[in-house]
Image 1: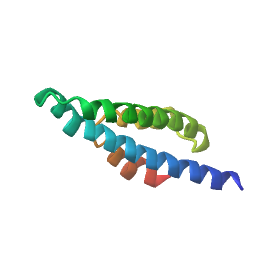
Image 2 (image 1 turned 180 degrees about the horizontal axis):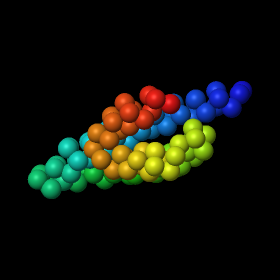
Image 3 (image 1 turned 90 degrees about the horizontal axis):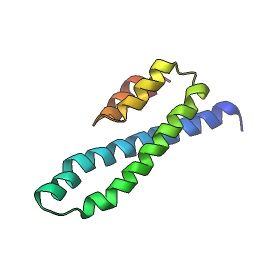
Image 4 (image 1 turned 90 degrees about the vertical axis):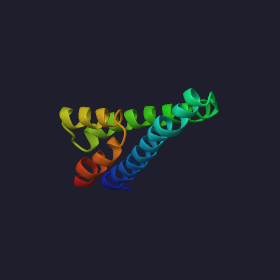
Length: 101
């Protein structure tokens, strides 16, 4: 398997993780946290919090790993990492960063 095929597979995994991490973040903010604090029902946070944390960690590791493979500048890498902190940031990343690679 050539390097470019492996890079493309890794990049596709990264894009999927980006999407899932973004969805889990939005779910935590829009559904789980309001239920926890308004309805005294912390179960969804206990369930989805660790899932989101794992996805977020994997996203950060992959972003740093792909920096050299995709020849991202430090600015692009930092911006990609910062977008994971913003709800719907993954949509912007997909449209403006990932599709151009």
